[in-house]
Image (cartoon, rainbow, N blue to C red; front, side, top):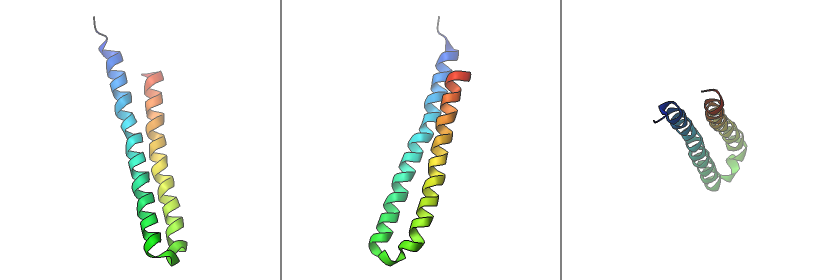
Length: 77
C-alpha cells in the first residue's frame, strides 16, 4: 500500500525548505533597502554598511538553520 511515513518525511523536508525561500526574500529586501538608503544619502555609508552586513549575516544564519533541519529530516527521520 502507501508508505505514509516516507510521504510525511518528505513533506516535512519541503516545509523546512520554505525557510530557505524566506531567507532569500529577506536578503533581497535588506539589500534593496540598504542600496536605496545609500542612493538617497551616500554620506551615511559608515552608518548603513555595518548594520546591513550584520542583518544579512543573521538572515543568512536563519536560512542555514532551515537547510540543516531539512538535511537532518532526510537522513534521520
